[in-house]
Each structure stands twice: as C-alpha cells, then as structure tokens.
Amino acid sequence: MHPFLMALAGGSLIGLAATLLLGINGQVAGISGIVGRLVPPAPESSWRVAFVAGLVLAGFAWVPLLPDAFAAGDRSVFAVMLAGLLVGFGTRLGNGCTSGHGVCGMARFSKRSFSAVGVFLATGVLTATLFGLLTRGVT
Image (cartoon, rainbow, N blue to C red):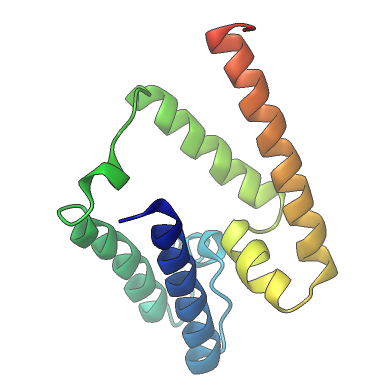
C-alpha cells in the first residue's frame, strides 16, 4: 500500500476513534491521560482498559497484514526503552501528549494545545537533529 494512503487511513481511523470516544463517552482520547489514570486505577476505569487493549490488539492484528510498517529498525532495546521513558516523562511535564493536544485539543481550537504541539514539534526537530549529529556525525 502506498505510504500516503497508509497515512490517510491511519489518520482517519485516529480521528474516528477520537470522535467516537468524545461523542459516546464524553472523554478526550489523550493516551497519556488514559494510561496515567489506570495506575492507580481511577473510578470507572473499564473504558480505559478497553481503549488501551484495543490499541495494543489492533497493532498485533495489523502486523501480519503490513509487516514492513512494524519493522523494528536498527535501534537497540535499551534505546527504545529510554525513548519511551523520556516520552512518558515529557507527556507528564507537558500535561498531555500528541493525541490529547495534537488530535483532540487542536480540533477543539484549544490555545493551550496549539502551544503544546508547537513545543512538541520544535523539541522533536531539535532532538532528532542532535541525535543524528551525535550518532552519525556531520555529513
């Protein structure tokens, strides 16, 4: 499948899921907030468990269909775990994640979300550039 179509389909499904969660449950699909309220369990956590389980199971369901989209790449397990830890720390520091601010907050025209996404993007570009320079050198 063409990368553009994959991105279009993925973005459409994310938007649909966020819309359904807000419309049916009255909840914003901010993944860090959903996961953060699972430990320790908040009242009415069953929908959170179902949402996170759906995310994980959907990934496993798609692997046989699009194995190249899930390639591990050349990163070590340590690097991936460190990146996940830093992302988790950043979402707590930023009071939200890309799904909460980028998908849901911007769709609701939240000024706070527009600011947060600007910081996310700038930090991501800076981090990727510095990481590339440190690991591959200047070309």
